[in-house]
Image 1 (cartoon, rainbow, N blue to C red):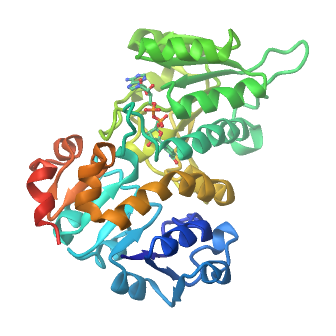
Image 2 (cartoon, rainbow, N blue to C red; image 1 turned 180 degrees about the vertical axis):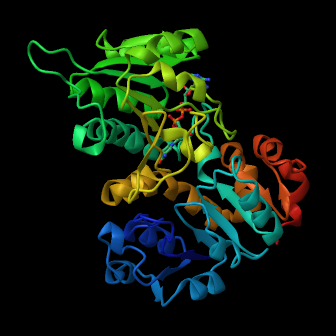
Image 3 (tube, rainbow, N blue to C red; image 1 turned 135 degrees about the horizontal axis):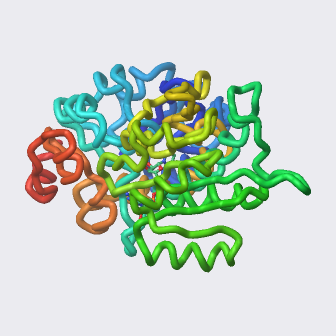
Length: 374
Ligand SMILES: NC(=O)c1ccc[n+]([C@@H]2O[C@H](COP(=O)([O-])OP(=O)(O)OC[C@H]3O[C@@H](n4cnc5c(N)ncnc54)[C@H](O)[C@@H]3O)[C@@H](O)[C@H]2O)c1
């Protein structure tokens, strides 16, 4: 198969979907790899590094989409990329379709086979291709929150860890999955007072063991969240219902309960946001204010640390890239039911139920359309 790697074009996105190690593996499996010139630059990978492992460098995205059968990317395709997709393409990338009916329609119209990193599952129902970026985003969430709490940046002017004789800041984390746990570990490392809220009791049990009493775990009922909001200096939103639009865990009318110039970091923004007042922002302009509360809602937080993120992401995606290339999408989905969960749009149909429901598209079983894919 011919595998293509375009340069990411989303604002402030510096990751790349394949490293030279990935090229080497694909080439050893008998595949061809075409990489857009400069695609690895943001992650400190030169064209020559790809070429040394057997890739061909092509001048632009048009050439990559024109030649490749499988396109591997990082972020959801932007409109000019959607326009380049055809029925013969397999697209493997983050898609986050539930909050984006427009993109979903674009992918339906393209006829391409679109496989989303974020809904691929492992044998235990976990999300192996979301996890590495969630680890990064969780760590950044606390760092960014701590920074935004500084007075010159519009924050309350409180140091997360406090100092002897002055209390630490309160960090409230809603959603104690991969993002939430990593955010908590950094907050604990900075010596803040940390409270993690989740609705899954088994998950709270696991966190309780991991934190060894250093952070509080709390059930995420509306009332309990409301009781903590007036105490919180930094609130990190990290909930996820697999593939679906994020539920709101803080509503607009609850902002008035919060301290003036407290900070909300909405990591779930890529699934539509878990605070009612969230809207996506970029690294160049990461925050805005609503009712005296700073909102940080960067939709591609790991993009800020591409050297870490590119390798963390591609370590996880490579086995799936190889499987898709070796077996072709139809057989790969058949052989790996967890990978099949990643197939969101195939041959003009939405094949992932939460996306179909959220975007008002008819849902069609994957097995009914895979054979029809080009
Ligand atoms: N903005 C970014 O750059 C970025 C990067 C990586 C991940 N993310 C996003 O972060 C979010 C979290 O990802 P994750 O990997 O930690 O997911 P996860 O599945 O590991 O954890 C989500 C947690 O949310 C909990 N939850 C669900 N509904 C809840 C509710 N109503 N109240 C409280 N808890 C609830 C679940 O029980 C689970 O423990 C996802 O939307 C993911 O796409 C964003």
